[in-house]
Amino acid sequence: EAGVAQSPRYKIIEKRQSVAFWCNPISGHATLYWYQQILGQGPKLLIQFQNNGVVDDSQLPKDRFSAERLKGVDSTLKIQPAKLEDSAVYLCASSWRSQGIGGEKLFFGSGTQLSVL
Amino acid sequence: SQELEQSPQSLIVQEGKNLTINCTSSKTLYGLYWYKQKYGEGLIFLMMLQKGGEEKSHEKITAKLDEKKQQSSLHITASQPSHAGIYLCGAVSLTGNQFYFGTGTSLTVIP
Image (cartoon, rainbow over all chains, first blue to last red):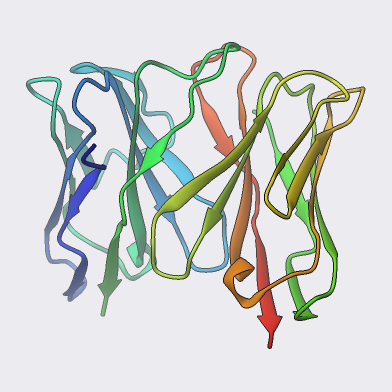
């Protein structure tokens, strides 16, 4: 079974530039998550999609970050313009359905490591 | 919001030693997950605990969820260099709509 695919693997940009990340979840997974992981910290949820709808984007800095999942399959996360503090690993994860009390484990991609200079 | 505090923040052990990582929640846990992250890579699912007092083992790793369901521990027996990485606990929010991660524990195993 193919895992969660993310690209690019690494990205280096200068501050104020724009950048986009791509994620293709496991086939059939309705729920897709984007996490930001700053060095030395646990992942922080940025946005959660259920099919092509947004379930939670409360921690997404909407003045500069945007994400979409137009057809309910793959997703893109964009930062425009980037700041130095955006340097982090951006992780994409997917699951069959939203996390519930019954439990659904998340499958993670390898992440995109972003360095903003 | 739910907060998960892990301790210790980092751990360096000699190969063969046992170790324990703790995850404490500010609220009752309805599902507690343990993930491992190799440096520069994605997260790998280890175990999930749901019931108070539940204990699960996989190879040399054992995880427990206490009766009150507000703390979990991850115990590694006879550690090996392959155990090195970042261990993260994660939990589901009361509504079931959000998945939170703990602060993480960095483990180094010295051969």
